Image (cartoon, rainbow, N blue to C red; front, side):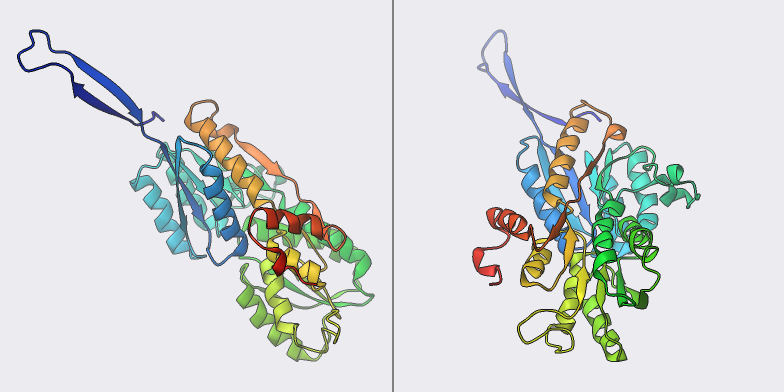
Length: 350
């Protein structure tokens, strides 16, 4: 896409001059990039948005606009169509529901606007329907690029720990992300592969969608604990839902002892500041880092290269690692959040 330029012509000769002269100074406008986040109430999406803004500030030739679909597919559709109307130079999309957003992502690409999908990747199968062929299903949507993390790797961290930690014949509950969201579905599949297949003695008491939302998870957990059967482990597809479920039992003496130690295990994904604080408090057993800072930096790095013609958007394909965070190493990650100003020393539990 050709970069838009603004030219300012300045008259340099007097009215009576025989040969008029003109001097032209060229001032380049910055590239206009839009980041469409899935929901501001989602702690990871909010973190990623803040990191996108910080990463974009490092580039003088990028002007970033951030908008949120608020977990509403109709609003997401409107925002994505708006990206075409406003003729952005490049669009970065964090889908809420991959299949619902895929047609609109394709419209942007077909309009000649480079698109990078991130957290999660939008796949060709999201547009065409699932084929059952893993290679085809995992192919990135034609004409787009991606910066992401591997959701199977992320969820496998907690799942493999849980094989050893969940008590024999344990009862667990499962909190799922939005139906149709790539990360939500793949994280759940990882728990089947790395935990439930290894622990057939474990019973899933309850399982439901909390859509990445802590309030929805809290409501579900409050209901589930009234069933009369003790829940030995909370298996959550993200930290935010785990936090909501934990909040529901924080003052329940069946689940938290007088000294604050829990009578349950809890596993999340994302490694947010919120999740790390819960690990420090002893209420979240483990999570896996999905580094929003690194994802944002890579998005902006590739965005600038695409916009400046150094690479085609279809060549953008990068995935960040997913280290496990637990009680043994949580201080290291808390320090990162202190250093970036997200939390302070006063926020850390004794």
